[in-house]
Image (cartoon, rainbow, N blue to C red):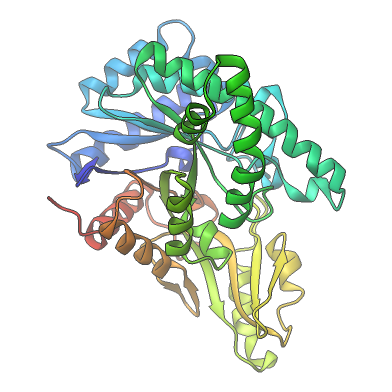
Length: 407
């Protein structure tokens, strides 16, 4: 929904199970209609739509897509952003590193993203641009320490993205709809943080994609660069950037300096704890972190040490084995807890990082699109769980209370 000064606030529907289009549509009917009535009764309400590969294929079959567009119009809803990160089942018993499959070296990832672009360009309101979030190219642990293999993965991913940029360029020329891909760094992704995203842009995207566009479309280098920067942007997930201890103002300033855009900001919070110096006093904190160690998703842990270095663990179980490391002073874990919580018993959330980002966005419009992305409701400890519809509403209202942009 338009919340003032051109900002659009929504939530990501990846929190709803459903890999078929029928299941996705049913969840939208169940949750979106009462949510709009309660949050935005008099104004259109936007959807951060998540479609699996299967659901996207089924949506393009028969008359499903026109019927969906009519349903959106009839109910005062619109789609302006799509979550294209999880390709397959996102709510099965074990997801873990499979969330990165297939990666950007594969034709499956490219074809899936092109399909999402077709769908979004059909659904997108005339006055808005559309964004598709995507994975951070691949998953580092699959590559190990093989530098040559990593180099080849970067090359293959970039070639696929060059083909996508060409497709998005032609789509805009033919339909007038601007669609951008929003790459989402996260811990253990091939792109983990702002520095790696910017380095990838400088070292791979700019030389390889602009050469491709010049060769394929006869563009000048300046136009090819502008086309790339129009269609490949950053998805700034607050949880992920908080995990890597990056300051959002520094990231935004570096992006602005290079002329690279932010496609969307995902409002999300991680778990954190300041560790007492005496390891024997950490037992209760360890027990509380153990409650969040579950089998569905990866919960990477990044530990800040006394000397300023960061230790990195691929998941909570491995990290808990080192909980009494006397050098550790702070833990942050990749677990998307509700953004309206600033603490859970003795654990804290990185909610303050969201507030920090909102203050920056009040001063300067880095992006138009804000998307709440808490997808772990089914695996939260029982004490935190609430009815899902009420929880979504509470998160959106929290943002509205903390974001002063009303016109």
